[in-house]
Image 1 (tube, rainbow, N blue to C red):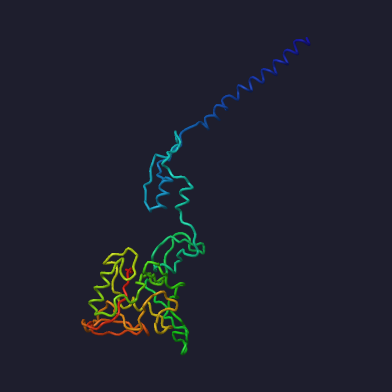
Image 2: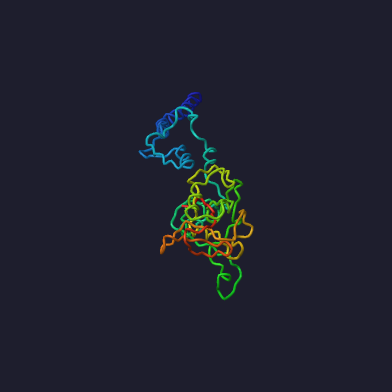
Length: 291
């Protein structure tokens, strides 16, 4: 009797375990079905690749979104692709010294800010298109006069850069001037135009590679931009790098509207602007650049 009960107890236990295991099989199969492997899809959406990002940063190329191409790769990437490190090398970096702020860019013009002072990313300029510079006068002679207010755009430091090739860049206007302010002596207005138009490398101390047609006779406001009314004889910023500056009149390319036989000139000793007949002889100071 005891033997029969023992066998019945063992059967009950073992059979119960077998039945439990069998009952779990369907659930195991269902769990496997929930995580069955399948290829990823883009669900019909289109995407840019990292190559597109690289070329947008490097050259501005737009690229095109591709649909259906972003699936699990079957081989390693092509060697022609760019790495994330290479993308970083063409990405813009913050530069709080030379990076433009909104006040440096024309009003309404968009640009990519390169500063960390709130000017990072896509920005819109706030500067007036043609700001007027300070006159250079720092002495006040009456209430709220020029010397007291010193209105206008502040002069950059340094104001000029000697390019060591016979040219000088004005860091205020971006214009490039002939370093030699007395090449050829005084001449008629028509000769002043011709000499400026034909100026090029190898003349007047130039080694900049420029060709005839690069230089020109400056218009009157360009000449005025050089004037510093805080200086006299000559009325140029202190420490300027120019050579041969004459305390005399210089021709501009601007003709007098009232009398076309007259042209405007500037007096480098004081900065005064007057007009006179074109058949007088005055000095020439060629310029290049500008719009």
